[in-house]
Structure formats: C-alpha cells, structure tokens
Length: 124
Picture 1 (cartoon, rainbow, N blue to C red):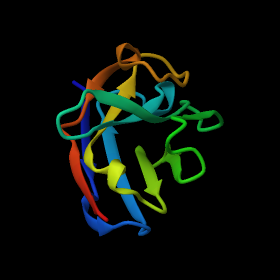
Picture 2: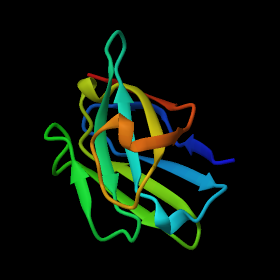
Picture 3: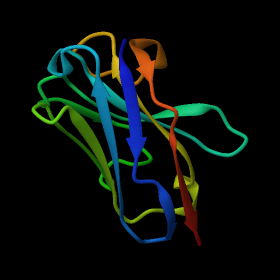
C-alpha cells in the first residue's frame, strides 16, 4: 500500500518563501513521477509541478514557473516544493501525489496515490 504524506504548510506573507515536503513509501520510489497540486478555496484542484522518477525532467504550471521549484531525493524517498515570492493566489491546500509511471504529467489521472494535503495561507 502506497502512503504519501505532506508537511511544511503554514501562514506566510506575500513575497515570503516556504518549503513543502512529501514522503512516499510502499513501492519503488524512483520508478514513479511525483507531482504537486493546489486546491484554492472554492476552486477545483489544479496542477502545480511534476518531476520524473529520475529527477531529470520537471514541469510547472505557468502561474508558478520561475517562482516554485520541485526536487526529489530518491534515497530519502522525498519530494520537495520550494515556494518563493509567494502571492495571495498561492493560498490553498497543497497535495502531493505519486504517479502511475515515471514520466512527468500535469493530469490528475496520471497519479494514483495522494496525500491528505497541507495548508498554505498567503496574506497580502
């Protein structure tokens, strides 16, 4: 059984930085891409960033390109999301997900194991 657990959320001010972490277990970590998704209050969950199983390929939503960085440590079986220069619209619950394959993807259907999420609140 795959387990995905996020941590690192919190309350920050616009322009600040924040680092989210995710630990996954239950299957070979490097064989699966990892992704981060955001669900803002009252809105549907949307793609933020993805990283391939070997960590070479990454993909970002246009809204976070240049501000957020996704990385992974396959020995520790963790994936991080560094949020820089955060904006109020970055507020929401951030979900980490483990992919069906090792390839990056922005589609929720490409992920089959999800964490419960961690809350990020950005004040103006």
